[in-house]
Length: 365
Image (cartoon, rainbow, N blue to C red; front, side, top):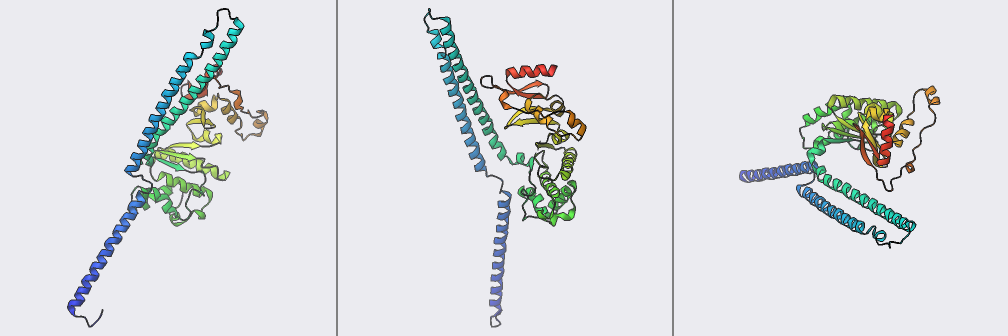
């Protein structure tokens, strides 16, 4: 400070510096606070956004209901005139001609009815979808659902440490206490079989199985009720797959989790699952308890999948014959449309009326 200044001037400059420092500190605190708010609300939509989505969904549902009414009205008009040609035939028309015309009208009627049912089903499916959209903007609901991804390499940020990867959901939900976050990270690391000193490491320093354990830890730290595991072992070495399956099984029992396990390997599904749903081209074709699906399979696609499960017994493999091949063309759904129906308690099958009766007979044999 300049020695030529008087005491009053020095004091005035000192007070001015203090004010500038306080102003800077206040501005910095405000900026840090805003950053935290931005980080916490990064994945949290605003109230206005939620209301907008809800209004859009409600409007789409109204439009779809109007389309259903119009489709029903058009079909009733068609039905009223569907057999007009047969009814207006002269009395002396031969039976052969009558039958030909009537068969033609019956065919046209069935095709139009099938078209109507298909359109209404599509509209109803979309109504269900639209009604669910606003619910997924509900933060408490989202916190109860977590995901374990297929590829542990691509699903982990290579620029983040293990601690930051696992604790990300805590930060998003506004938990700022460092000790609380660190204790929780240590707890889940222990649950998934990793060491405490791993928190400062990065994803590239781990094996595939360890990376997937990090992904599992990231999912369970939010204490969800449901974990969706999307083929969590398909990208792993066979020797590691059993470890991850056993880990998920232990966590399910220890934490009381529900795990939606998506996989192509039915032998793994049989080991891990209580209930099984078999899907073909996005549709559930058979669903039920594990025992009923594996001991009393009915749908041809389920039979095909089960027949392809390899058995660790070469003698059995030789004797059991070729695998069952599934041909989707064996189903005739042109007029008799299928649906998912309960064929016995806790056992559902995708079938039309004719197939349902055949499955019932096979079940009672």
